[in-house]
Length: 461
Image 1 (cartoon, one colour):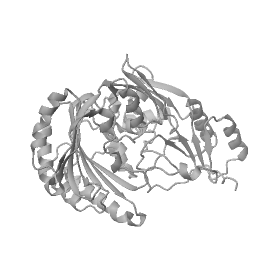
Image 2 (cartoon, rainbow, N blue to C red):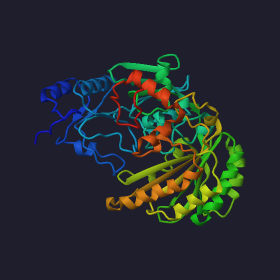
Image 3 (tube, rainbow, N blue to C red):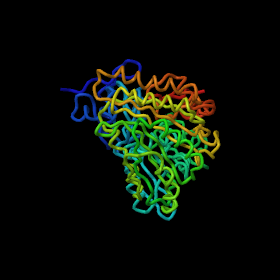
Image 4 (cartoon, helix red, strand yellow):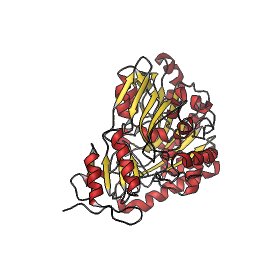
């Protein structure tokens, strides 16, 4: 069966001769509908996403990315960019167009003397941790090892080390980027500084980032694990956690999660990660561990990559997912009550509400120093609906929306970009906050035709 026709944004068929010419210069793999491997390629982590690209361009290197971008531009194809991770909102795919697929570009080079890591755009956090850990180093990035480094970083990047070393974007030294006109640019503090600013929190709006240069930090072992309470104690746990974190040192990042254990028990879990001296960490966490009547306490010294993979089982491939984000300056009692009530009313035992505590080094960066604007937010509540039966989608999405609505009175009206599903423009714009006008000007300079628009889109000024 011959591959299906490729249709561009004007509704015209892209000629087979053009496609074959592209194929002859492309070193990676091209996949089209009807060809072996295509159906597997279009399945991503979130089963709720059902799209049919016209061409997958699985790139082997930067030259392939340039070729794919140039081919799409010359033939007026819609373009999506795929990294290596979750992509809850499905922006890694598009209907009918071309997917610039970086998932095979996972190269990582660590320079232990400079404490830097050069990471290609298809790598996951697990890939990065494996290479940096061999040198006793870590890059501050995320909380789940299957997360893609590219999407996480471009959205800001929050994780287990952020209170000590800042957000992921605070640890980027440079970006290698293919822009809409097919040029390869290095963006850093002294090269294309405006683009460097915009890529640190502006999402995938300005080009395809083929590699990142990160500052790494000496982190080998941390104090971490699960501290689990019955869900019935959720209000008390959250109130204690709020007060406990007021005086927490920068070395401690900790989150709470209201969810079900694999055997179906509803719980309120606390997950700390202390990255300083372990003996001091034992002292810092003593009060947290002695609070209430936990049913499980697994806190212990462990290699940092073990922390990064501790929650992987709660985010399996192939389930349906729908997320909401709600950022707060303070976590008041009304918000805590709303979180607990909606956790007890979860419509799926696979769903969860995660309460993330920020601040520390990440909060001491100015709101306009990078494109990520919400440095004042101390809390982000991630409402993650997850289920297996597509017929149940309406009820689980409704639960997530209801929880977000209940939190709105105390929220900042701000959102974490990488935790957003498909949302209307006003939500996307709020995620960029007061930095949106500057981002629109940068978009106009580097992508005036909005070539890269299958993303949390910033329109050119």
